Image 1: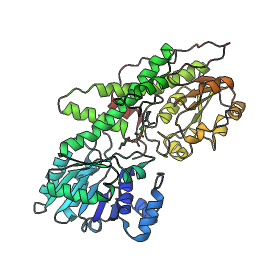
Image 2 (image 1 turned 90 degrees about the vertical axis):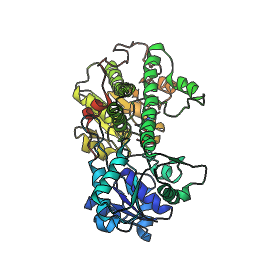
Image 3 (image 1 turned 135 degrees about the vertical axis):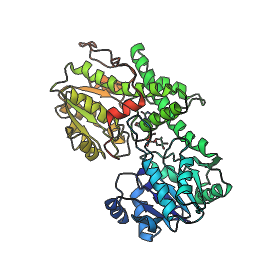
Image 4 (image 1 turned 30 degrees about the horizontal axis):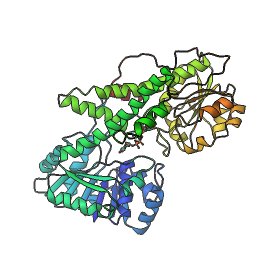
Length: 468
Ligand code: UDX
C-alpha cells in the first residue's frame, strides 16, 4: 500500500521504517528540511537500536522516501498516519495545533477515500475534530479517520513495532478498519491481538495505559520510602507482589522515577482530559508528586552523605531518561543534576549515548568520557540510569579514584553485600543503607522534604522541555 507518515519524530520515523519493512511503499513527510536531507541519506537524527539499518535498507531500495512538499507526499497515499508532536501547554493539556495542521494538509492534497490515522497520543475527541476539519476544508472528499495509538518504547521501538503484543484500531467505519487490518496483516501472526473498538475508547485507552504504568512506578517509589523507614527491602517486596499474576512484576522498579517524553506529558494531559470532562482524577496528581519526590529523596541521600553540597563534586552515571536511548527529555538524571547544581555542587556526568543531548540541555554539566573519569575526585557518585555497562563496572577501581567512597544507587543496580565488602557508604533505593560503623546516618532519613502536592502539569512546566 502507499502510506504517508506526517511527522518524522521518534514515533513517526520508526513507523515509517517498520511499515517499509513489512512491505509498504512509504513516504515520510516533515517540514524540517535539514532533517529530511539527513533521512534521505539513510541516517537517523536520534539513537534507536536497529533504526539506521532499516532506514538504509529501505531508502536504498526506494520503498521509503522522505519529502517536505505536502502535495508530493500526500497525493498518492491510501493511508496517512498523523504522527506529529502534541507538546504540553503550560496547564498540561496537549497542544493539538500540529494535528489540525496535518488535517488541513490532508484536506488540501489527500486523495479520495483516504484513511487518516491518528498515531500521536491525543485526548479523547480529537478524531472528531480532525474529521470536522477535513469535512469543512474539503466537503467533497471521502475519507475515514481512525485512531491507532502506538505502544512502542524508546530503546526497543523497532522491535516493539515489528513484534507488537496488540494493535489497537478505533474506528467508526468497517471499511477503514479493514484497510488497517491490511496495513498490519504481516504482523498479525505470533499471537498479536488486533483489537477493534470505537474511536473514543482507543484514544482513551492509550492515556489509560501510560497513566497506569506511571501509577505502578510511583506505587513502587512510595513503597521504597516506607521500606527505607521500616528496614525492609523494596526489591523483595516488588518480587513478592509480582509473583501474583494479577499484579505482575513489570514497572515495579523503584528508583529515580519516570521521565521521557511520554509518561509525564500523558499523565498531565490525561488529568486535564478528565478535568474537562468534569471528573477530578487527582490520583494522577499524586502519581506525579511521588515521582517528583523520588528525585528529591536522592538529593536527601547526597546531603546525608556529604553535609553541605557547595563545592562538592558529584558524579552522575547515566543521563538519559532510561537505558537504550540518547533522549534526555524530562530525564530524572537531569532534574537531579539541576537540583545539585542549585545547591552549589559541581556535577559531572557520563552516559554511553546521551552526553551531547544532556550537555545541550544543561550547559553547566561537566561531561566525562567514561565512568571512571566521571568518578575521579568525586565526593559522591549517583547511579541514575541502569545502562548494562554500569553493572559490569570494576567497583574496586571506581573506589580508588573517588575522593569519598559514597554511592547513591538510584536504580538498585549494585549488590549491597559487594558494596559493604568494598567499604562503600551505599545508599540504595528502598533497601537498608550501608553506612560504616563509625558514622551513623545524620541527615533527614533519606526521606524527601515535604513540599506539598505538585500536579503533573506543574511538574512538567517546572522541568521544561528542551527537545521538541
Ligand atoms: C512509554 C510506554 O512504555 C510506551 O508504551 C509508550 O508508547 C511511550 O511511553 P518510554 O517512554 O519509551 O515508553 O519508556 P518506558 O520504558 O515505558 O519507561 C518510562 C520511564 O519509566 C523511564 O524513565 C524508566 O526509567 C521508568 N521506569 C520504568 C521506572 O522508573 N521503573 C520501572 O519499573 C519501569
